[in-house]
Length: 266
Image (tube, rainbow, N blue to C red; front, side, top):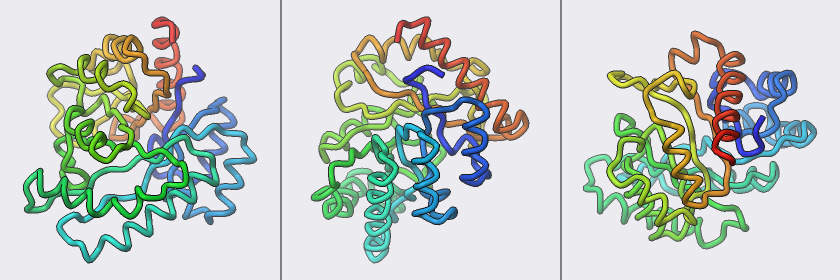
């Protein structure tokens, strides 16, 4: 496994933490993206201890859940959820905490951005040193985020002075992608990697790198050339992953991405 590759717990979506850990040990997976939901389901303290005992590097923590930006009455509960996630990130030594914006509802983009600023302000005032990575989402997933382009998520993250999780599956066809990466590479905390087959109109629809149409090697070359020094996190979910099986698809994805990064001199 390349030292800059990690495998997200999303890639074994319906498995428990114990099943994940058994798989990681058997497959030689040493770098992971951990799931807050799986930690909580396992019993927070117990689950965190198991991850620690396994000697895993946790490149990121996911699974916080989105804000309902159009309903401020729900913000306190989500703020408490993020505080819990910060505690979890400290406990498992996660390198960053991945956050989605939440849906805009009937609000305009700008109004949703202002609402997000208000919702996050109490959290960002004291993160305890944990780095946030704001993730943009596929435009089909308006239920979890209103920010879909890399340019827009960079704009918001710069406004909040936090990091960015670049989701290649959501931005690979964007105009000026390489320029945006190059101009804002210091903002990148994490790069998520998967593939996609052009013409697929459903979601989730991710593929093992190399199985689809995204020019991943070209994009990764541009990201590396910009000076990105962080991790590349495999986030695999969808019917093709389910059909192949979590273990087989995960092992194959790690091997393909590791070989690709080796070729690129990462």
